[in-house]
Length: 185
Image 1: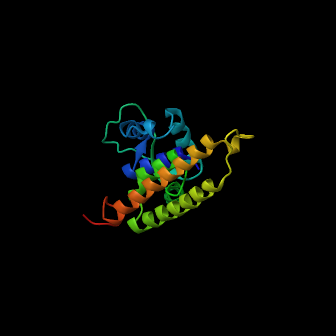
Image 2: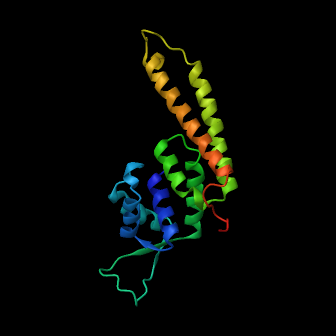
Image 3: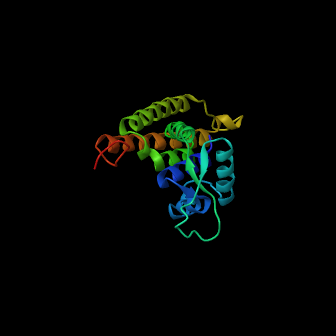
């Protein structure tokens, strides 16, 4: 799954219409470089690819608005919105921290109940993973890397931490924290 693709589609959907520099500015102002590995060049490459795949389309600029140098503006097509929602649902269940972070950034674009269901699936999968990691054999003097107690321990701690954070987020959402798609106020 491409976090860049999700970021670009989500950013354009938030704005309605955007040009590449607008997407870049949003990601910079959100300090996305601290929670993703997105590079500026990947934004423009993604914009080209999304348009070629029919997920975005170019928009005609309002002739009354002085935009400065000529630039291409994009909006997300219905197919692109479907792709965004598919990627978002996948991100909200991901074990990969950068992908999950992008899912959190856009979670409010789905209904609360659906986000809760996705996070509950993630929590369940994390519980299973933690239980599996606890069964792995380790050796004081490991005969192979997979039996190194530090390696297994690091992964077990990582998964337990992810589970704890996911359960805290579920609790917040259940108590009404944040505003989601379809909610008034």
